[in-house]
Length: 266
Image (cartoon, rainbow, N blue to C red; front, side, top):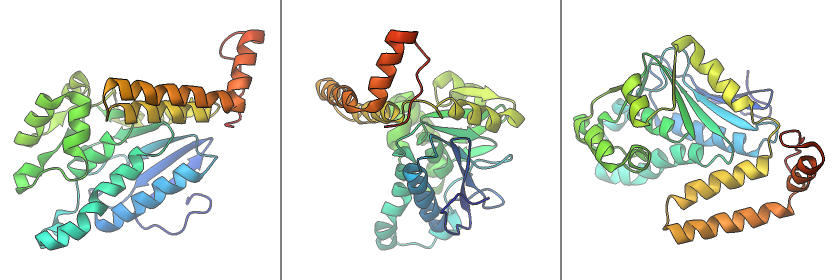
C-alpha cells in the first residue's frame, strides 16, 4: 500500500505502520538500482524524513534479495561525460537514505552487492539473513564503488578490511560480515524483516529530537577531528534543553524514575 501522500513510484514504496516506515525496493528479479530507482529512493527518503508518523525506518528489498547492485546494463554504454552528469545521482540516492534524521535499519536478505551494499551501509544498523552475502565487486567491472562504498565501508570496518574487500571484489557471507562489523545481527531469513521492524518500533515513542541530534552528532563527528566533534556534541546537547521532550523527560525521571516518560517529539 502506498504511504499517505505518496505519489506513484514504480519500484520504491514507503509503507507506514505503527510509527515504522518501510522503504521497500521491488524491481524484479534482483532489485538492480537504475537511475529511476535512485530517483525514487531520494523521493522515499524525503517523504520518510518529512512525515511525523514515521519515527524510524526499515530499508528492505523483499524476502529473496536486498539489491544486487546498480544497473550495469544501463551504465555500460555511458561515456565519461555521461557519468560526470549522472554521478551525483548515483551518490545522492544513498546519501538521502543516510541523512534520514531518524533511526534506520537495513533488513538484508540474499545479495547486497555493489550499490546494494552501499545502500545497506547508509543505514544506522544492518540485520542480515544467515544466507546473505554482501560485497563491493565493482573492481571486477573495471570501476570502483561510486555511491559511497569507499567512504562508508572504510569508516565502518576500517581501511585495511575495506581495501581488501574492494580490491578483490569478493562476496562476504553473513557470519564473516558479523565478525568484521559489516552487519550487526544475523538471523534466520524468515525473521530478518520482522526483527528489523521490532528494532525500529522501539523508537515510536522515543524523544525524536534527541534521536535526531544523536544521529547528527555521531555522523558529523566522524567527519572531523575530535575537538570539532566534541563542539558539535556540545551544541546539540545544549540545544535539546529548548525542547518540550527534555522538560518532560527530566521531570518524569525526578518524579517517577527512569524510562516512564511519554514524549511528543517537540
